[in-house]
Length: 221
Image (cartoon, rainbow, N blue to C red; front, side, top):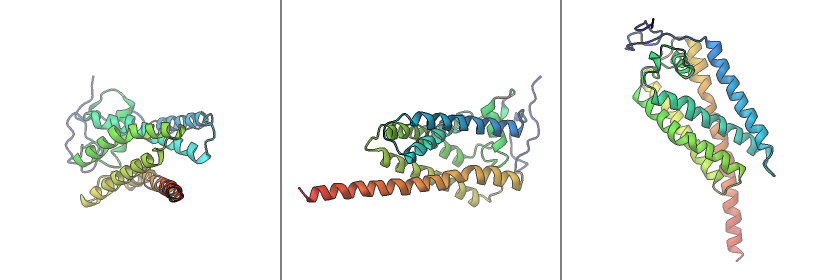
């Protein structure tokens, strides 16, 4: 027997979600699986990057970040973008459960807000694969690695800015409680503000240094 048409816990209460099925998994299960799998991915990349010849610790950390954020974009956010009926799943599909849980902090996800779907779509389809390319570029010391990372970070910062600004313009009232607002909407997203900012500064310095060296060599010819 399937459970459909249940009352949902999201804000606003009159949000239309025909066929909504309540969450099967507990919050601790959902967060624990995501946290554990993310840790294993980062640990794997940290160990793997140790076999790259003459690589700095900074680049190893960057590889860990890019594999983590790249898979998050492609797998987690990609599922959201291409599964509009995730809230109707009648079996405990983990990725669907993630978004039903996260929507307690931002109901624009379960409500399929056009702006959120657009931002997440670009993030999943373009930025996700670009993050994995950044891992490859750093490991192989490709000349374009700093430009690539800078471009991805600017895209992430732009997407995050649009995400928060549109929420403010629409009233910033999409969370079921202050806990979900700060735990999901604020805390879960703040990493994509300060980490890309630091990487932008890092890449900017390296690009400027490379240009300066090139110009000095040009002058001495």
